[in-house]
Image (cartoon, rainbow, N blue to C red):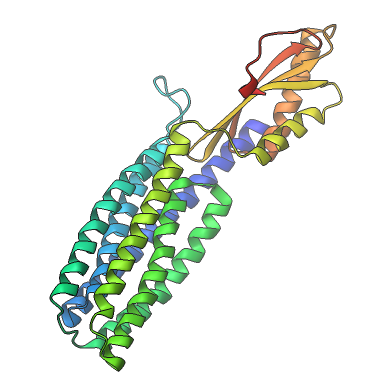
Length: 308
């Protein structure tokens, strides 16, 4: 099997995993919105309302993620030669703005309940729903983590953050309901709701930051760059490397590197060496596009410090 075909099959598998993860998150969000809506109507709890709003956000975000994943996996075309991978960070940036706005509204609701406290009713229903939500969310988070490890998808990673936050949020709601019922701490409920709103805002900032990193074509982490450099230098015919540039767009990494070789090598041999180095890099980074330039060793050429 050629490197190209194995690379293609890897991307096909990545696409399947990413789509399944988004389908799973949409299904879980829909289920949780339905049961939490009923529980909130029964209890009139602000912290439970915060959990309901977060699940609504997760559902909307998961739907946006599905659209972004489909777009990101569209193969390169005439007008998008580098593919459509940046659909992922664009969708994530939009989600961050949407999440922040909703969290601010939740914070306002919590403040109103602090000023004008209202009793919580039928806490048994609320507790049952939140325990159910914790179990379902935990299963989804474990599945999403497995998908992120295998795909490196930013969209699925963002979705996983939402649901990890949900775990904390749902547990906080359970604690708030118990404290309110057992000890009569009426103000605990809006305080927890407000704290959760601040947690969501912080998470939205983290999501936005990750998206900006990809949209601004930030270099891959130093440890990855050193690994790529080591792979290239491991070829016995390669004397040095320079002008390495890397970036990521969704699940795809783009790697550019200059190889320094004996200036007296025939072009055919130099080309073969470059192909071998490319194959080695693709073996380590199967979801990448690699561009290699061949230079004769010892020839000085202008180089920017930040490209080394």
